[in-house]
Length: 224
Image (tube, one colour):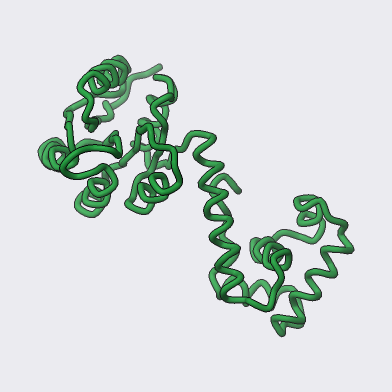
């Protein structure tokens, strides 16, 4: 592997031994250099101000200023810095809070060195990185959020019709929707016809336009 410019990293965690091990793991890679450490959120902000790293690798549970609050401050002050979470917290509240604050990566502390290094390099390049289980939970969370949103803006639709409308707005054909939802194509056609009738649209293009005007049609994380 050809060495390129080193990716600079600041580590934030209130456990000194964990920071020591993580620093050793990252510094062992030829393209990564740890330029600072912090034991709490306030210290993290100060260290980043002085070092201006490419990536911040932070825990969430820290004294003085917790990780989520620190992430919000960092992404506001230094939008070019990639922030990645490495934590024991795998609950939805912690995960979604960190993502809303601006984190571009989220790994659990059970991740191995290879996965952490790969994630740091990816975040430094501008990518978003999540462990497989985390990505599935993000999808589930936002899929349910979209369904709730559809129910609010189009209350006349049934739950199944709301689900189909989202897929129609994403540009899927009836055949694709049928295979995805394990329905017959005729059943999908009937649902789409019912949706158009309820929305007052007379063709698929108008239905898609109305749905997208309402904010539908965005793919979930991991969908292409």
